[in-house]
Image (cartoon, rainbow over all chains, first blue to last red; front, top):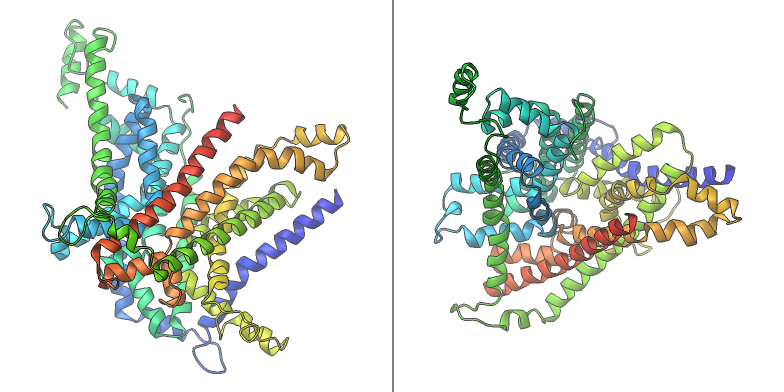
Length: 263
Length: 313
């Protein structure tokens, strides 16, 4: 018993070193902008950069729209598959795996070819159209995570009974979905939303190839031109990712558990 | 709203059922309507999938077999055979395979240590939470982090040089290389492995190792004949998933190496940006090659996973 504990501690120690040293080194590097002394000047320089504010705000907005569109697409599908169309489940689950199979660069290359100015739906022809395309690309990117989060949420409530009760009270399917099911899975939906945000906020490939002024291309640009600001940006990005994941952990404590009878 | 009112009036005269009605009175009509409702509910999802996942990908697949004049051709596929392109595929496959296999091995060992190594309670939860964060901490910031750590001016490089008098870069290490990129990819591959394999390790019942040791099996024998064979399908499946994960990644490599390390996604990125191959069809063929490889890796994952699940039943 003693021996198994020792190797576990050693493994754990090596893992902690591998995962924490880059974080510490990045933080240390971000403080080195002034010769001979530590300072937060790199952070000040990042936060006061108008391009930082503009691109971060833009990515946040695109992410929010992606979340909203994702909810409208995923929640009804997951609900009806669970309640009335279980035979569609394999198809839907295959579709949610597609964004993991098709790399983002392939997806955006396809969009550029399919929705160019000479096509039926010339989304890349205008700035607004390209923005829409970027939102939809992020919806696609986040689809597996959003679907899994919503489906997990639906599993923890008794969809069948809630629907029957609401039907008896005279609600139609839209009302049931919006005012009975949705409030019950709001925590799961928010988990999916934060995960979506964590994925899309620093996304580079799609935003860059669609030529949109998003946070990811900005990061790349700073990385190519500055020495210490990139380290500060990496620390900031890590804090954002950590924050999004922390919100998901926090939210899971508020998840309603009416009954797990279905399934 | 009309449904509610009809039900309210209906409650006075139970014979007239409203639009929603009672499911028992006319099961067939209700079934038909609810099926229609179900399909309407699933429709946006499927339409989205067709327009923004399937058709764009199929467009590229088709584009790989069309020449400039719009005629069918295999020339684009044959043109992939140039040394530069073959080389970029080869680097990509090597980096993805190395980071997938090493990520799986280290991830498994860490997960085993945390779950079965009798470490204090809180560590397991902390490791899983951190894995959730680190597996999402990919892309450009990850490249920055490793440049600050192992780059020429990075903390570890500098400490090794000043304290231990060891110059990594003179010893042949280079972050902007195959080994450097693999080391960086492990930062999101290992946590992903931990997240995927942890439930499988939980599935190894305590009774099995107790039964084995009662029968006189050593620890090694337990892992050789019971533990690893049970985990094996999960391991293989996860390796192919990690492979696909690394194969499609571009941002980390691009921020780390610029275009000095020509992995396929970076070559494709340059092609989309500026047609560096001077042939749009060749770009589509390049994409087709990527689709085939990642799809192949994922099919292995799906097949193995379904087999593993069947076995567990």
